Length: 353
Image (tube, rainbow, N blue to C red):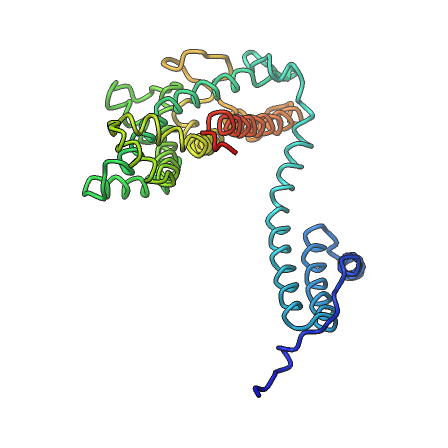
């Protein structure tokens, strides 16, 4: 007969859900009361102190009723839930701050007027910045998506871990971590070398800088999605006599379209909020410019930065416009994510279920 330790003995009771909710509510009340006495009452401190009290209380109660194993499980569950709530705090805080402060200038004038000719008593809008963001991001997407997608196809379908494939992977990893200002300096140097004009600032320069930042993200995300396509699908296509390029176009890419759309959307969202490379490549025009090849342009990040850093005499309205620009930028990113999900839903291959 083997000896049985105390930790191996399980109690027959069960800690019911109402009891667990009562422990949670009691922990929150105790945390609020404790912080109200010692000071420092805020949502983050309530979550931290309440989580500590709850973990201790649920462990003691579960060990007394259910046994050591269930008590350990509930303790770990409480710790994991606490870390999730802590991760949600900054996200919710950022969203709440941007929405609450950005609604002040969310009016038709913000979307229909530029800052051209705006004096001390006028407010103006961000129409020119919205147009600049759409144009530069669109051009950067047209440049980076084909390059990144074809590079990913080469790495997964043709590279076979050769010297060129290893070198491409290495440089993609290096480009992933470069500062955004370096991409802007590269774009300026490239156009200076090509045109010989050191003062050349235009939307196309900013688009090239954004494309440099987008390409590694597109390559890495597309490569991972293409590698998830089962090899059995490729082999079945080859067995039917289909060529390799047609297999990639008709089998591999449609199968991975959902992940590819998500990765490209994340790449666009990653560069849409960049400020430093656009500030040195595009300038900060106060007027609408539809020509990306000539003249300085603006973008929503530049508009938000200039409105907050140089508010002028109408300081409150300028800062409110900066928050509204951030809100519009966040809304554009959300629209891109919704579009990616729609693409995934309507273009992903049907599974027959």
